[in-house]
Amino acid sequence: MAVAKTARGGAKAGRPLSPHLQVYRMTVSMLMSILHRITGAALYFGTLLLAWWLVAAATGPAYFDYVSRIMGSLPGRLVLLGFTWALVHHALGGLRHFLWDTGRGYELKTIDLLAWLTILLSLAITALVWAGALWLE
Amino acid sequence: MSTKDTMRTPLKNVRRLGSAKEGADHFWMQRLTAIANLFLAVFLVWLVVALAGAPHATVKAALASPLVSLPLLLLIVSAMIHMRLGMQTIIEDYVHGEGAKLALLVLNTFFAVVVGAASAFAVLRLTIGA
Image 1 (tube, chains in turn purple, green):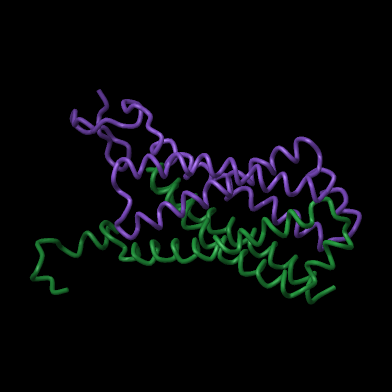
Image 2 (image 1 turned 30 degrees about the vertical axis):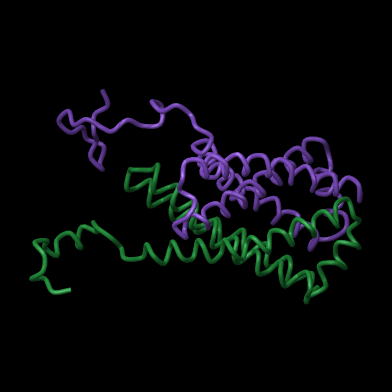
């Protein structure tokens, strides 16, 4: 049994904890909640890519071409594909949170529907964006 | 608040326990920047798709326009505030040691400011400088 710890890490006398993540059956809304946080953290570090691209453009043609080639390579494209999906998914998750902020959308059916819409629309929009980008290229 | 209304002593404030009374501001800024990001991120995706694979001269010319650089600058500011608040929440949720938490919260702010400043500097240089 898990034992409660004090803020400084010392064990307290056998105090039981409420069950945590590992004992619950995964639901789609739970997965979307986890993905919202993971995509948020990924976008946090993904801003380094945007900064790199902008700094490269400000630096000059030679360095910009070098960065452009890395980002246009297959591994580069895969990272940017993941970046796109994370951005779209996080944005759609944010829209869900705006609805919940108004006190609406808490019925179980609505929650499930919104969760499925989030994952399906995030994949669809990502595919559309990349289809557009590859077509224009 | 009068001290007579509560059984608590000022000691808890000295120990920095309890609410810092900034929670509502955190919540509000997170939402406010989220609304801004929604529009500005659509702009960014459109811009990047339009410039995908473009040579340096084209990208430079695009970023020289205020119609491009201004939304980019707004996005940089809004995104940095938003992501700093988000990462702060993650750190406070998972890091319980006071020293590690404090160090990561400082690093979090530094990261947002440095990435934001570098990006903004690059955009400004392309649109008004060099």
